[in-house]
Image (cartoon, rainbow, N blue to C red):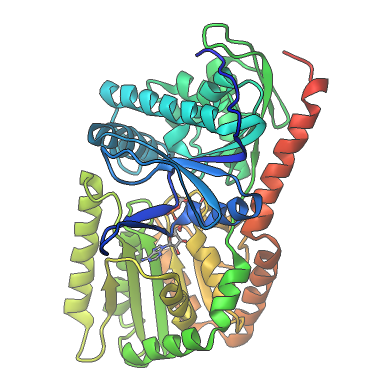
Length: 485
Ligand code: ADQ
């Protein structure tokens, strides 16, 4: 790739992510855009608004070209994807190769050369769009596993910009990552960034180790020395790989949780559930990484043995539809629904349902009401970069009560250390933790919840993005003084 000039009127701060934070609404006479929820959106939107930058991403509709537009004080630049690219780049390489590979191969990743070709092509389109959007010397923040090649491509196109990359999902140990036929290109791609952020220190360490083993590149502390690559058109530089655990907009959730209408809605939810003594809640995208089956197995066995009874407890499982065209996702949905059906068939009575299951998404206000209504929250991911649901639950517990059961394989376990930690593969341990949570005395709930809430009030999403962008800026200022490898 050859360097290109900076645009005359470019943006000073550019976010590059697979999806724009909007959905097309075609229900009315005139199609409109409305902002859409989701982990990444929750994380970056507040920063975008405060810095008035540009956001580059796919608008979510294949084969359609949209002009850049402004919404909620954000400048949005749509990138076109053909339906074939959606299949190969997005559903294929991103979600059926990298996603399972980076999540401990819970299901087998598929390696297809046609998917890889599409991934490269689409990454280059994103990189070129970023090169045409960023002002001279701008900061460009690239997000997630769909765009791992963009940092290196953008560096070749625009050596003047400062490039950050954030990996929202785990980064696997070398022994797993090395299965990827294109591991070299993926590593070199991400290493085009000046700063590479991960959720946990262990993810960053896995990444640095991969760079050492595969590329033979030397590391010092968090830094990796990347030599020049004349073929790809990049100069020697130092790239830093470190942990920046993402968080939630604690203040916004706190405001929602104090809203009298939402408080009343939470009370209504409990009444509608039949006023059980204990409401247990699970909230996830319908994904095989989230451990929904393990959770249901443990809960079902507790009902089987009589340790829990539908006289006192009910489980509300909310599972957002996700990646529904992929086989593995159809399969997990079938398995979850079979398990829910079995448990309800065996244990529900009239007005006493064992599991209330929802396969759709809810507005944020309604989600908050569910968090407020739940005495126990179950987060049992088999592997999860962070898991914002765990943090959202804590942020909504304005009464300092409630019990969180949390998988040690979710990044959130590093911050929410007062949760009841579980290994979700250990069904006996999971059952013990659920019982403990259900029976936890109020004083213990308060002690644990207060400590977690105090931490989240400080370590919110604004602090996360600020920490990442501050460090990126520092690295940019230091650039002149850096010894080249
Ligand atoms: P996800 O895998 O999507 O995110 P998570 O972090 O839990 O997982 O974020 C899900 C978001 O969607 C939460 O904000 C939640 O409230 C919302 N949500 C879930 N179900 C919903 C429903 N039915 N209705 C409405 N909203 C719903 C990826 C990584 C994570 C990482 C995030 C952010 O897999 O590990 O924490 O990115 O980096």
